Length: 602
Image (cartoon, rainbow, N blue to C red; front, side):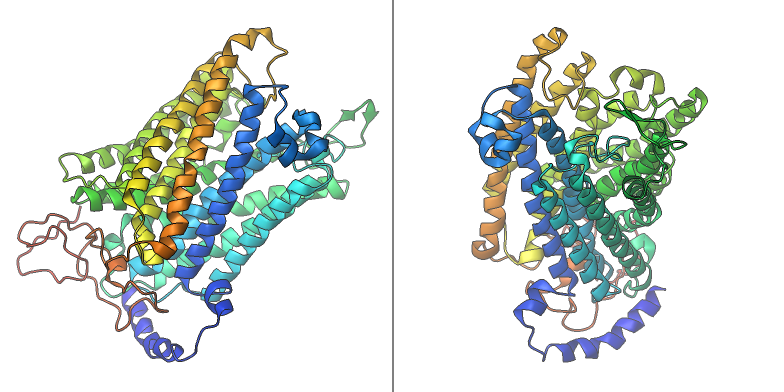
C-alpha cells in the first residue's frame, strides 16, 4: 500500500512544482485554502475564539452560583435588561449559559482544537504525503465547521434566548417549544448548527482515514507510524461510526418539534394542557445521544493522548515505552468506547441486569487507559527530561487523566453512581478527565508544533507562567467539586439558597469561582503569547526540539506540497532517541539503518 502511495507522490511532484508559478491570491491562500497546514491554522484560531466565548460563559454562571441574587454590571452589559434585570441573572438564561458553554467546549473547542487542528497539520507531514487525499473536501469540512460555529453564536441573540435544555438536550424539555424560552428558535438553531457540525466532522474523518491508509511514503509501514497518527486515525474511525447516530437523534427531534411526530414524547401535560403525543420515549433519545456522547469523550481525548505520547518521547530523549501496547490500548479504547454508553443512564429506569453489563464494560475500559498511563510514567522514568512548556502540559495531562479517571470508576458502577448522579461530583469527574486533560493535550500540542505552524517560537517564560497558574487553578476549581458533589449538591441549579441543607457549601462555591476567575484571566497570557509570536516571535530553526519524525525534515517556510524535492523515504520507527552507536541522541526516521544495527521496535 505504501509503495503505491509513493509512486503516486512521484507522479504529483511535477504537478506541484508547476503550481508554484501561479501566484496565490489572499483569498486562495488564507481563506479558501486547500493546503492542510493553512486549514489546521483556521481550525485552531476558530477553536480559540470559540474557547474564549465558552470560558466567558462559564465565568458568568460561576459568578451567579457563588453570589446568587447579587447585581453585577457585567451581567447587565452582556446579558441585557431582559435576561438580567437590574444586573441580577434570571434562572432561564442561567440554564442557557450552561447549555451553550457545554456545547461549545465539547464540540467546537476540543473536537476542533484537537482533531481539526492536529489531524490536519500532522497527518500529511508525519506520514510523508504532499497533502490530504482531498484538499477540496478538507476545505469544505472547515467551512462547514465555521458555518456551524457562526449559527451557534447567532443562537445566543434569539429573542426568547438560546437553547436551555443542557448540552445533552434531553426531551421533553428540548422537544416542546413551549417548555422554556430557549426551547423555541434557540433550540432549532442549536439543532441546525449540530447537523452541519456533524457533516463537517464526517467529511474530515473520511479524509483522514483515506490519507493514512493510501498516502504513506515509501518505508512508512503501519508499525512505523508515530503514535499521533495512530490516535488521529482511530479517532476518525470512531467519528465515522458514532456521529451519524447523533445526526439521526437530532433529525427525529426536529420531526417531534416541527412535524407533530412522537418519537420521544408520550402522555405529556404542560401548564394543565394535555398534549396529543403518545407512544414515544425520551429514553430512546438518551440511547441515541450517548451512543455518540460517550465515544465523543474519546474523540476528544485520543488525539490528546497521541500528542502527549509524541511530546514525552521527544522531551524525555527516550523511546516511547511499549509502542505496540500503546497501539493496542488505542484500539481497545476505540472498541470499548462504543459499548459503554449506558453508564450515563443508570437512573433512567434501566433493567438492573443491563446496568450490570454496562458496569462491566465501563470498568473494562480502565485497563487500556491504565496501560497508557503506566507507559507514559515509564517513558518519563530516568529520562533526560527537557521541562519546556509542552512537556509540562503533557505531564499535567497524565496527572489530570489519572485523577479524573479514578472517579470514573465510581461513576461507572451502577450502585455507586446512583448516589452522586447529577451532582457536582459528575461535573468534577468529566471536567478533569475530559475538559482539562484534553485542553492540556491541546496546549502541549500548540507549544510543541507552533514552530511548524507559524515558523516562529513562542515565548518560553510566558509558557511557564501559563502552565503553573492554569495547573493550580484547574485543580482549585474541580477538586473541591468532588466534595460538594458527595455532600449532595445538585448540578444545573442557578441558586441553592432555597435549601438550608446546602448553606454550609456556599463558601466552597465562592472559592471555586475565585479560582475560575484567576485561571481564566491567565489564559490572556497564552492568547498574547500566541498572537504576538506569530508576527514578532523569534524565527524557528528547522528542528527546534531535535525530534525524529518526518515533519521536522520539511523547510520552515511553508510550501504547497511540504517537501521541495522528492518525499523522503523512511527506514526506522519514530522513536530512536538516545540510541547506542550514534553520535546524536536522536536518529531521524529518514536515516538508513547501519549494518548490524538493532531495530528497537518496541
